[in-house]
Length: 177
Image 1 (tube, rainbow, N blue to C red):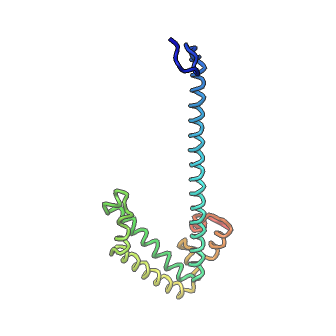
Image 2: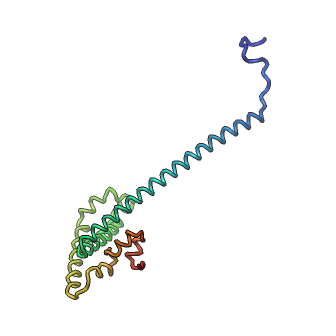
């Protein structure tokens, strides 16, 4: 018996299996290519976002360094010495705290800032900075030279930053000119 529908001839011819496979493979390849291209576009967008954020942070860091240097050598020396001391105390704190060993120091960072270790490190660094500044003034040593000796920022390093030089090379004394 023939079907009542007039649209489909009966009996239908057998489809060409090889042609159908090729068509299926072509469609699957298109889907895979589209997914790969979409992933590549997303990766490129994320890379651009990260690069833009890094450039913004770098600009903000340079502006902060410039403002700090404008306040004078005493401020630079005191601030940088305290920052180094607090960074060392934070490293020691993360090595001894359970959160630090688990890599979850973010939750414990607020506690560290108010901890006796942090306050003691900052106070000790301030006393040391004041003593070194007083000694430099007694001996007639230029305070910017004192900053350079310790690897802290100076007007020269700010000018080099403005020209796009590497901060680490400047502060470690391996950069010339």
